[in-house]
Picture 1 (tube, rainbow, N blue to C red):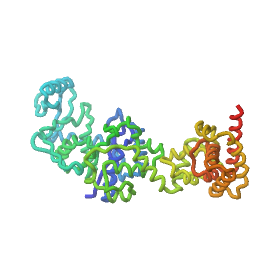
Picture 2: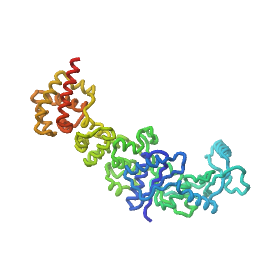
Picture 3: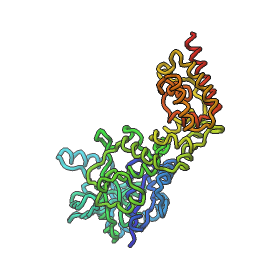
Picture 4: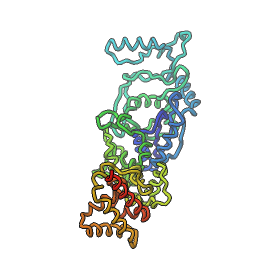
Length: 470
C-alpha cells in the first residue's frame, strides 16, 4: 500500500513553528516514498475554530510550498460518519452509556487523590443493566480492554508498551452527542487509509487508546512517529513568549520559505554535519529513524543565519520581486529610482531579511528627511561643507555615471585634497543616505542617480553651513 501521511491541525490559531515542522516531516516522508500527503482540518471545537484560522493555516502551507495531494477535509462535514461508528461500537459492545454527573466524577476524583491513586473513571457504568437515572443526558464511553498491553512500535521513540489496566474508559461522545477527538481521529485515519501518523509527542498518551479503538473496529492502525517537542532557549516549551512562533510572521519579516524549511528540517533531524539542504536533498535524505528522541531548541539566530545564506544565493530576479513587494507595502514610490534588482544586488550581502533589505533601500528612492545625529556629529565637521561642494563640482563632470567610475573619482578627489578616503567618503555617505551605512560609495552614487546625488550633496553642504552659523 502506498505511503499516506497527513497534517491535521485544529483551526484555533495560527500555524506555529511546531505544527509547521510536523507538516514538513509528514510531507517529506510522503514525497520520499512517492506517497500522498493529506490535509485535514480538525474543526470540531466549534467555539474556538474560526475560518480566519483555517485561512492562516492554508496560507502558511502555501508559503512553505507544502502542497497537499488531498483535502482539505473538515471534520465538521463528517459528523454523520462519526455517529455511524459510535453506533457500531455500541452495537458490538465496545462502547456504553455512562450516566455519571459532574458531581459524581468530582467526588470520584477527590476520593482517588485522597488515596494517592491516579484520578480516573472507575468504570461504574461499564456493565450497567439497570434503569438509567432520570434527567441525565449520558456520555458514551469506549470499553477499553482491561487485560493485556498495547505495543506501539514508534518509528522515532522505539518500542513503547502500555498496560491496558493503565487506561480508563475514555469518552467518545459527549452528552450532546458530539464526538470527541480520540474517536474522530481514529475514524478519519481509518477512512483516509493513513499508513503513517507523524505528530508531536504530546499525543503519545492518546496513541494506545486510539490503537484499541482501531482494533475494536477491526481496522489496522497506522504506524506512529512521535516527534519530540520544541523548546525555547530558556529550556521551556516554545510559546508566544519566545517571540515569533507564527510562520506567517516570518513571511512578513522577509524570511525566505526555503530558509524556514531548511531550519525546520534541522530541528531534531540531522544528516552528518550538513547544515544547508536543498528541497531535493531533504526528500532524498530524510528518515524518521534519524529524528532525535530528545527535544529540540529553537534558535532564532541560527534561523537568521540560514536566511542570510539563502538571500545570498537566491536569483536577483526573485530578490528584486520580493524587494519590490516589500517596498510597495511600505508605501515607497519606486518611480524614477533604480530597479529593485539593482538595489537587491547591492544590498544582498548586507541583509539578513527582505524587510531589512527594504528598510535599507529606502534612500535609493527618496531623499533622507534628516541626518542621523551621531553620524552627522562625527562626519560633518568644520570644512566638510566646502569639501562636499567641491566634490559635487568634480562629480558633475563624471564621463559615465557607474559604480567603478564614481568610486575612482571620489578616491582621486580625496587624494587631490590630501585627505584620507574616509574623510571624503563618510561625509558623502551621510549626505546621500542620511546615515553611515551603505554599499560601496561608487555603487551608492550610481544607484541614487546623477541629478539626485548632486542635489543631496549640495543640500547637505547647505545644512552644515546653516548648522555651523547658528
